Length: 374
Image (cartoon, rainbow, N blue to C red; front, side):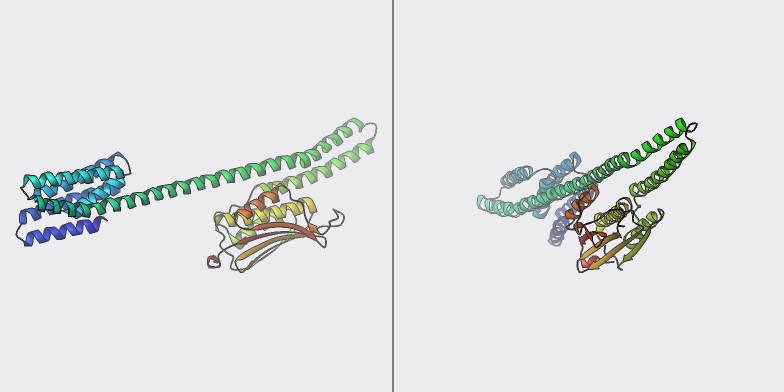
């Protein structure tokens, strides 16, 4: 917008110079330089009072340049009106356009221009500067849309942060409930066994020692439970890790419990974006945690397979018959899997849990663009 208008005005100044009107040409060049300086300053100033003042000064400067040079610097005036609309309002631009027309009438009357010539100049000039009004309205609308898009993006980002905090809060609540029901119960039994041993060690030494041994076994189980929750509630820091490396890190953290975690990941691993990568990590983490807690699994397989425009991540473990008897078919969802399923659906994916032939299999399916594979 600025460069064509300034260029056209400079070209007009050159024509005046060639025609012998060197004074008018010099005034026009000086006006162009001043306007260019204002335009540069405008780019460095945030929207607000300073820009409003700059737009008004630009209109006044364009008008003064036309008066002193005694030429119709239409491109300069078009640019001034456009800036006024973008930085102030459409109404301000229209008012300035009308005042500019009145100014031309007064100027023509002052210089004694005949009515016919004056009216023709007024109509043609106002029509040309009217394009500045249209351009300013279009640019103002574009700026408004840009501001709205920026605001919406910031709102979405804030919403993502809030959602993440909500998920973490829900996970902590679930952990507190599970710890109370599981670990709390075990520690209560330990306390009762030790209290019985303390009261009965004189009268029933053998019974007291049996309670001590029971308390010791319960304590070992409680420690194992605590280690498991520590791994479940301290996710892998995935800022620099993704794909195979991130899954390796999760598997290694769970191997500290004594379980064997097999990993089979297709390469190259798809680029799922931050939300997708994070969901894959949390899904695998949840699958490993559930396999240890509910199935007492000692061997767990993690697979990630890319096919077409989707990736499928599966966590599979065999359930020992002495732990529980499973019927083939879909498994009921707990809070963890339900939360993961909802997050997957937000990304256009699915989460399923089912039992088959004594095995539990959790499957996450996510879409991605094939061009994003890296």
